[in-house]
Each structure stands twice: as C-alpha cells, then as structure tokens.
Length: 385
Ligand SMILES: [Zn+2]
Figure 1 (cartoon, protein in one colour):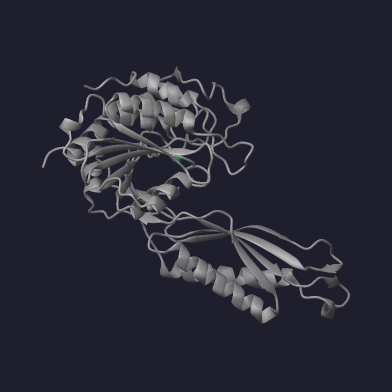
Figure 2 (tube, helix red, strand yellow; figure 1 turned 180 degrees about the vertical axis):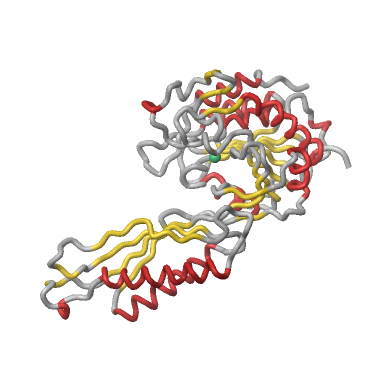
C-alpha cells in the first residue's frame, strides 16, 4: 500500500520556496535540508526507502538516496538541491514563490534545477516496487554549485547506486554525454625584494612570473595541438591566465607574485596528470631563476567526462528526444557518478540561458515531454527482461 506525493505543481512550489543557496562565501551559504526533507517525505509516502546522508565536514548539508525496488542495476534520476546566490533587486518576481506568467514558471531553481527533482517524483507516481525488475533511485545532492561536496562524498563512499544515471541539468531536453573538466590553481613565485636601483639586491618574482606566463602559453599551444574534440564549440583544452598580483612599489624589486589560472581539459585529459605537468614546469622555471614556488588549488577541480556514444542510456535518450547526444560548456556531477560505475547522461527541461539569471524560469511546455521521457527511461531500465 503506497501513499501519494502532493500534486506536481505543489512539489515544485515547495522546493522553490525552500532557500538552499550554496556558495564558497560563508555568509551566503545555506543548508539544503529544506529541500531534502520534503523530498524524503514525499518519496517515503510513495513507497521509496529514503536515506538522508549528511555530507562529512559540511554541517547542514545532506544527500538523499531514495530507492524503489531492489537488486543490482537500475536507473538513477539525479538533481542538485542547491542554487547559486541571487540578486533580489534584479528579479521582477519573488525568487522563492513559484509564479506562473506567460506560459512560464518563475522562481530560483526552476530551470537549474530543483524542478527536475519534482518531475522525477511525478514520473515515479503510482509505481510500486512490484512493478520494477531493477531499482529506481531518485538522488538529490548537496553543493553542486559550490564545492560539489555532495557528489564527492558519494564517490568517496563508493557505493554503487545504479547502472545508468540521468542528471537533469538544464539542457533544453537535448541529451548531453560529455563536458570538459575544470581546474583552477594559484601559482606563487617567491623571490627577494630589494631597492630598484641595484638588481643584485633582490630577485624579481614578477620577472619570474613573466617568464612563467610565456611557459604556460607554450604549454597551452602544445595541449591544443595534441588534443582536439570536435563535439565541443571550443574544440581544444583552454588555459586562461585570469588574475595576477605582485609587488608593491615601482622602486622595489618584486619579492612575491601570484597568478591564478583556469584550465579546462577535454575528455581523456586527467586532472592529476595536468597538475603534475604544471608543477614540473613551475618547479623547473623557478629552479632556473633561484625562486621558491608553491601551487595551491583554488577548488578541488572537476574532471572531464565522456559517456560512450554506444551506451544504452545515450541511445535510449536519443531515440526518445530525436536529438543526437552532444557536449556542453558547463561541468556537472557526471564524472563523480562515472567513478561509481554509472553510465551518465545529462538531460533536463530547463535552458542554461536561464540558469544563474534573475527571473529564472521553466517553460511549462517542457513539463509533459520531460515526464514522458522519464517514464520511458524507467520502463526501459527498471522494467522488463
Ligand atoms: Zn545546475
């Protein structure tokens, strides 16, 4: 005997109404339990077994694993529970009150991506464990927009969750099977300050950084010459020199200089290998010039991901949507799911153009096809031989 989740519109409104900003800026960061708890209530009443797993080291943050049916294999429908911070004064609607206007549902997280969690609940409505040959998991994660601590904790726990996964990030209902990775590192060169009138009194970290920037741009040319993936709008890995600070006065030799870089690898380039190569190049140049050096991670980094074109989840989504699976320019939790052995597809009803924007909305017309596609995927991967 299973109960009932609330009507779909009430579920979306309930999730939007619960503030769940995640941010590396502590004063903006909020708990996500206001989203996790109602989801767990609805899914428990619908017959799912719900586990709320606190994220280690991140008080007030949790992942939800809600499972219907049992056994190996199965399908995971996944969404993140958090949103980015917002500028209230730039919104024409209340970000926390779901508002229908002009065929659209407005609210923070409508597109990216709390609505997807409600749509996954809706797609599972009426199913009983007896209907399923393989489990259906609805997964709700913490902190995707900031540290990815939720997905990282799941990957580290190492527990298999399913054979296939769909992450409902905003893709305009077109399937996506790959994205680049992201790493951001802070490079410090430390020399010796001294009076500018006599170069022998110091060792300029700024001049060392000038040489290192040349070295990094040469490395970029090498990477771009060797790695090319035409599915991406920008087909090669990118390396951006985004921030520099060094020295304090024109009449002092610069004692310390810091450069921040952003590197976005194509699938097949591993973050660990890139870091090792970066450190090697920095160490060699610093050694030549008698400088000390240090490289810090600005965040843990997100690997690139590519699910094979021949994967059953890719082919099923292509057949259901009529679009061939492509690439996106943003990163997701997919590489962490990949580590858990799940073949992962990114497919959701929102549009990335609306994500992280004032007056974020979900087009109402996207709702029925999303539910239809999710039901078909549940049928294909959780039911029958
Ligand atoms: Zn998102």
